[in-house]
Image (tube, rainbow over all chains, first blue to last red; front, side, top):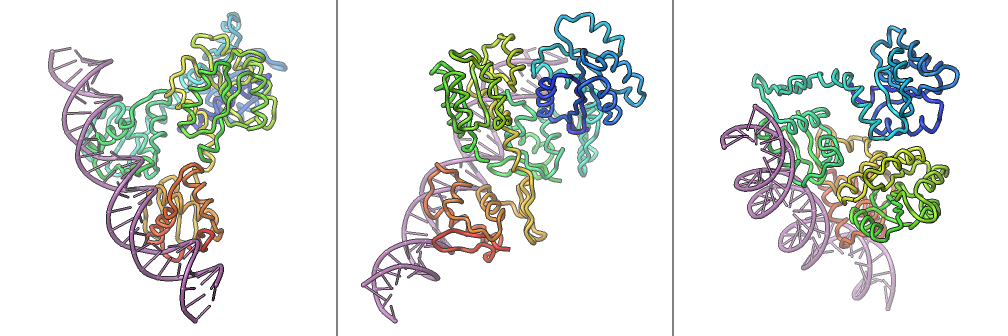
Length: 226
Length: 226
DNA sequence: CAATTGGTTATAAATTTTTTATGAATTATA
DNA sequence: TATAATTCATAAAAAATTTATAACCAATTG
């Protein structure tokens, strides 16, 4: 499952919060839907079957708690993770919230990074499904679960960075991944590495997987070809 | 959109910070404007419509927070990304800033490389616009994602400049692109190249794609014909 | 501490890009 | 029309950029 296919339902009565949280999650690549109160949330949840619901506790019409209980009773949403937005210190709501079936809390005021990493953590189990997917390309199989590569009959164990790089390039054979793109995906955009780091990893992959599978597009990046 | 067309508004009351950050971003190729307080920032933002505003939180006359709120209320700047400069550990500012409509934070002390990569990340969504599309013209297909050309059944890999030139001309078949226009688009306004550079690239394209596809309009420029 | 991994650096190699020089084509002009 | 002046085409050389690779170092792991 790609990030884009992960839908998050965001419920809050303050448009400002909706906007900024939605922005941050959308930027991360998730699909985000919004609702402004509990009733609307239940409706939307039924429709879009989100993987995650982020919901304010206090809302007009129907508060988060009540909505949560309702949603928990909908069988097709049993897999959905529900997390509450709550003002820091509102301990009582947490207790009550857990009884209502919430999985986690995010405290206000919201910090973008905390929010995003929390969401990622909560969605990990959904991503795992995707990660378990084996990528098969000709005689090459990338098995994420066991972190190994099958090259024909031969089994290869790659170090993490090499594995990730291969997995990235192989996730879209033919596509040229720009250096910047590779760095963002595998190193993260805060990590600074020298200009030759990618080359070195590519070389190692070429040694192990085969020289001809990795094409250099000079001035642009690299691509994996089948 | 080329980097040069991306304008960043930098707001800080310390001239040292302005200078060093401006230097780093200018070196990267961005156009950088500066302001020294919130009031000036709002003025300038209206004028130059920057894609990104990097603003100190604490400033005289009007602090970053207030300026941020103001800017967020200007419709034509709704797409502008705002990020704060904040001393590490100033958590309180993050909370408040988030509510004021900030998108991200950069913590002081500023590390140039981190700054630059962060800026790149923030601007990514603007750049993404023009990136992913195939141009099809008769038996010629320009595939930007894979950085390759299909000429009938034949696959061609062009060097970057040639690829960009072809993509530019082919983006409007029939239109005559003036030399100046080509230079602006592919080399950028401030890169100075000799008078024969374009010709040479055209010749290479003619060799690879076909002599008759590129028409010379003497005294004006070149056009691509189908 | 030995082995592995992730990363850097220096240098070589490859390729791309630009310039240069010369001739051809076109346009302007006497 | 002949001549001069522009402008472009082309091949080849030169310069600049970008990548490949080996060797090395630091951090981590067991």
